[in-house]
Image (cartoon, rainbow, N blue to C red; front, side):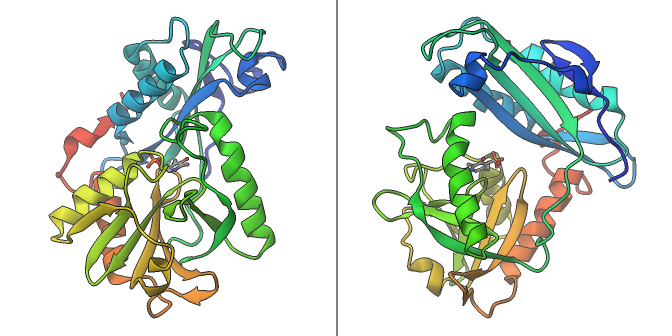
Amino acid sequence: MAWSAHTIIQNGKPIPFEEARVHPLSVGLAYGAAVFEGIRAYMNPATGRLSVFRLEEHLARLDQGMKFMRFDDPPSRDVLRQGVLESVRANAPDDDCYIRLQVHIESRGSQSTTGKVGWVCAAIPRDRSPKRESGLSLGVSSWTRIADNTMPARIKATANYHAGRIATLQAQADGYDAPILLTREGKLSESAGACLCLVRDGVLITPARDSDILESVTRGTVMELAAELGVPCEERRADRTELYVADEVFLCGTGQELVPVTRVDRLPVGDGKPGAITMQLQAAYEAVVRGTTDAHAAWRTPVP
Ligand SMILES: Cc1ncc(COP(=O)(O)O)c(C=O)c1O
């Protein structure tokens, strides 16, 4: 990726990227009172035009997050939508971009302070997973996924990422690419920044919404694409040992996109190669995000 970001949108204003500021004692930083979205914009190879993928779904989830955080006077969906599109347009990227839209408390205060709310939107280059063809090696973590009545697992709150961070650092120290987190009951939950999918006997299985997962936009997309490809899908609680008997495993998320998993706890998944259904779904995902198919045009918001 040749381009770099020179402009960031802070509280609705485009400013030089390096000049964005919040105070170190802001409640957003001091107590992690922030919610965000990671969004991608993809370039269509024929037209060279960028479209933001599933922007409305990301904005809707952010609305839920701001409500949950009891933020005072949160920015409206229209304002944030304009911010996202402007963050991309202003940087004139010549390739795909990753967009971080973040709403936080920018004033100082205590852990129960609910305003003043500020926001930033940055469009930056982001590489794709280097393992998107060869596959990841994952390890089941000794850390458990945050429980829904401890931290808001289905809200994309920045503070949640502390749990994902320590599990990732442990997994990497143990020689894995990333962790798999279980719920407190020992059922499969997700990875540290992506959802988990298994394929057994031709059926796609993904941990249910009550497995302390982030309700992932990509997971929803993958389930729709699977149905269109004639792959039955089960959204249910899933056992850890299903990982070891699955024919295929993959991760999905905006950042990871759709990446095969070829080893879990050093055991090969299926025959140890990226699975056929996984790679079929990866290709279908690539077509729909980039708009090389006319299907699901409503999922792509063109950048003006
Ligand atoms: C903890 C966590 N789970 C799952 C996902 C996948 O969610 P989405 O597909 O909405 O990006 C993410 C973000 O990418 C995440 O941070």
